[in-house]
Image (cartoon, rainbow, N blue to C red):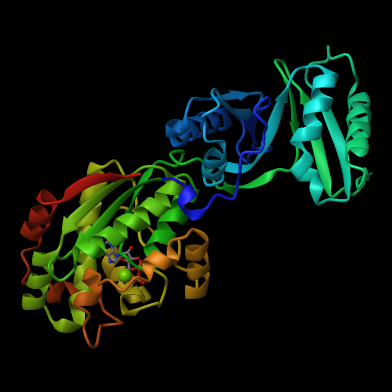
Length: 406
Ligand code: ATP
Ligand code: MG
C-alpha cells in the first residue's frame, strides 16, 4: 500500500529537534449530534489501521480535532501524509509543529518550520487562538510577536490582514502550542464503514473500479466479486483485477475479495441459449450469484459499473432484466455519467493505466454478434429455460475462492 512507489507529494520538513504532527479538522461536518461522534470514532479507527505499519503513532480525538502524533523518529511522516490524503471522511488536514507553551519557543520554532511555506509568497498574516486562557499573551499579542519575528526573518514578506497569500495559525491548547500553515485538501466523502457494507462486481475494465471508489467515498465498506473463466481468461487478467482493487483499497481500506469460477456457466449458456441473449443471461447469472455471496458477507447492496446505454447490456430494458433476478438494491453510481467523466475519475484515482491493459474479460470472450438491446423479461426467461440454474449457482459458489486485498 506504499505511496512512495508513485513518488510522494509530501516530504518530512521538521528538523530533528521539532516535533511535527498532523491535525484533522472536519469543521462543520454535515452530521451533528450523536452521529457525528460515531463518525469521528470510525474515522479515528480507519486512520489508525491505515498508518499502523509506519511506526509508533498516537491517533486521538480532542475537541473535534483529530491529532496524529508520531511517537518515534523512525515514523514515516511523508508516507503518513500521503495516506491521510486518501482517507475518506477527511475534508482537509494540516501539518503542524508542536511547541512548548512559551512564546520564545513558538517564535524560534516557527521561523524554521515555516521557511518553505513562506518562501514563495509575498504576503501573510498570523491568526492566534487560545483555548488555554492562562497563556500570558492575548491572541492579538501573539499575532504581533510572531508577525514581527517572521517579518525580520524573511524580509521579502509583507503583512496583509485582508487578503494574505498565506495565513499562519497559532493555537494554544491544553498541553502544547501548535503552529501550522496551509490546510491541505483531503479526499472528502464519509468515513468508510459508516454506511455499512456493499459488494462491488468488479471486472478488469475502466468503469467498475470507479464505481467502487465512488461508493466507498460515501462510507461503504467494500466486498468485491470477480467472475473468472479460465482458460478463456488468464491468470494475468485476474492479477489485473487484484491490482485495480489494491488501488481502490488505498482509499477504501481492506477489501474482501471473492473470485467465482464462471467457465462452466459460460459454456452451458453457449450450448443451451440463443446467441443474442448470451450477455444478458451471463449478467443475470452474475447478479444471482453475487446476491448470494453478498448476503453471506453481510453486504446490503450490490454495486456495478454500468452506465445507461453504454453497451447493449446497459440499455434500460436490459437493466430491467438483470435487476429482476435479485431482491437487493443494485447501486449504479455511474449510471448518468459519460465515458469521459468516468475516465477522468479513473485517471485521478490512478486505476486508468491498469484498466486499459489489454487482458480479456469473461464478458468479452462470449460477446454475441447481435446482442439483444430491447429484451423483455419473458423472452429472457424463455432463453435460459434449458439451464440448470440452481445447480450452476451452487457449484460456482462452492468453488469460490476468497482473499483480502489491502
Ligand atoms: P467495466 O469497465 O467495469 O468492465 P463495462 O462497460 O465493460 O464495465 P460490462 O462488461 O457490460 O461493462 O459490465 C458491466 C458491469 O458488470 C461492470 O461494470 C461490472 O460491475 C460487472 N462485470 C462485468 N464483468 C464482470 C466480471 N468478470 N466480474 C465481475 N463483475 C463484472
Ligand atoms: Mg467490462
